[in-house]
Image (tube, rainbow, N blue to C red; front, side):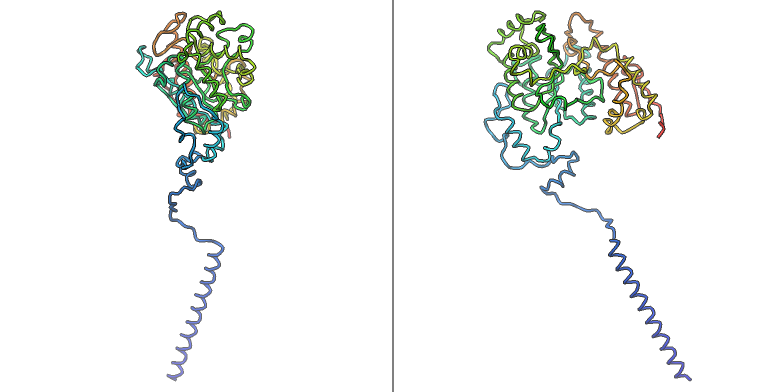
Length: 432
C-alpha cells in the first residue's frame, strides 16, 4: 500500500510539472506574437549627435532654415574686392546671390517672399525732449509688425558714409543690407517717423512680381505736373537684385557724394517749381530719373496708390476714432473675429477679416502713417505745423496701432491720447 501511495504521489507531481511547462510555453508564444505585432514603446529620450545633416539642423534652428551651416565653398563674401561702400559698385549681384543660395539650400524655399525691414535714426541723442521716447515707440511699432508677419529688422543709428546725411543716409544702409542679406528678396526701407497703423495688412507681393521698386506715387503728377510731391521716397520696397544695385548707385550720385551735388540741386529746383529748398534731395532725384529716363525706369517701378503704402499724417489722424468704431461694429456681427487667439496666428484672422472690410467703406485702417515734416528727434518741424499737433498726433497713431497688438495680450489703451491708460479686454466667448 505504501508503494502504491508513493507511485501516486510522483505521478501527480509529474502531471503538475507537465501542466506548468505547457502553460509557460503557451505564455511565451503569446508574448512573442504580441511583441511582433505591437512593438514595445521606447520611453527613453533619443539623443542625436550634432552633425552637418541639414534636417537635424533644420529642427534645431526652429525657423525652417539651417542657421548653423555656412559651407566652406567660396562665395562673394570671400572676394577681397567686394565692398559694402556706397561709392563702390557691385557687379553680377544676381549671380552672386544665386551662388550663395545654392550653397545654403534651406534659404532658397520661400526666398521670393522674404523681407528685411530697414530703418534708423541719428547717432546722437535727440534735441527734442520727447524725441528719444518717440523714436523708441516708433521702432517698437516696426518690431511688432515684423514679429507678426515674419520680417527681419535692421535698425541703424550710424552714418555709414560721412557725407550722406539726412534723407541721403538711407542709401548706404540699404546697399549694406542687400549684401548682408542675400537670402532676402526684398529690402523695405521705412523712415523713422513712419509707423504701421494697420498691423494686419500684408504687402501684396504678387502685385509687384514684375517690378523692382515700389513707392507711393502718382504718374499723372510726375509726367503732367512735374511735382516735387508726385511720390514719397520715405518708404520704399526694393528688390535685392542687380537692377536695384545700379539704381541705388545712380540715385545716390545725385547726393552729397557727387562732385555735382550743388548742380543737381539747381537742376531739381528749376524742374520742380513747387520744390521749397535748394539742395538736391532723394525724392526729387527719383522723380527726375522717372521723368528723364522713363523708358529705362518706369516699367520697373511700381507707383502704389491703391492703399496707404505711406499716408500723409495730417489727412489720417482724424480718422482713427471712426475707424476703430467701424471695426468694432464688424466684430460685433462676426464672432469669429472676436475670438481670442495666439499672436502667432494673427495672419489667419486678418484673412478672415478681408471678406468683411467692404462694410467699413472709407474707414479702413491706413497701412502706414508718415509724419513727414514733424522731425520728432530734432524738433525742427515744418513751420506750418504746431509742434504739439505733431507730437500728439504721433501718440494717437502709436496707441491706435498698439491697441491692435495689445488685444492679443488682453489689454487696450482706453484713451488714444493718453498712453498710460490701460484697461483689460473683457472675455467674449463666440459661438463655435
